[in-house]
Length: 164
Image 1 (tube, rainbow, N blue to C red):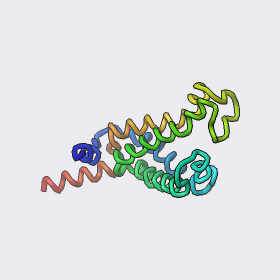
Image 2 (tube, rainbow, N blue to C red):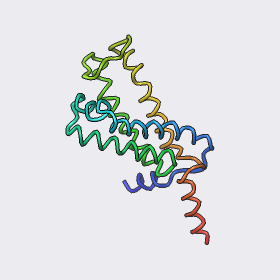
Image 3 (cartoon, one colour):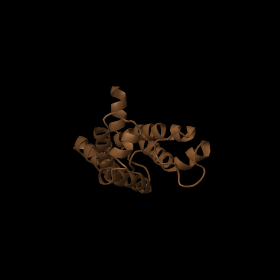
Image 4 (cartoon, one colour):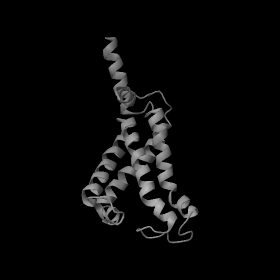
């Protein structure tokens, strides 16, 4: 476990500047989706209630808060691997809690507005955003935040303190 924590807390920070675009994409989406869970009941507590989550108000508010904070972490490139790891787990839970019932045609959520309404093609269509977010977070977990990040700034500062 100690090795995992060390690996998560010491990300590479030499990646290309273009990693910033991926951080902005994933961080921005998580950030505004977190806000939407507070603003619109059907996206937060209502959705978590329909899905049968225990303590839906607490769960929805926790997820919304972590999406806002984690989204900001990704946007700024701070604790990037920790945030990416959390979001990977969140996206896996989101996929399993919403898409299996869609596949079976038993979803408690409104069905897609246009065909396909159930089955594998409905799942593949509805999963596109979750899939993109999941893979961007896998990339950020592996590659880190890149050189234009607070993670990189902190690593440079640690190195200069050690050299002095």
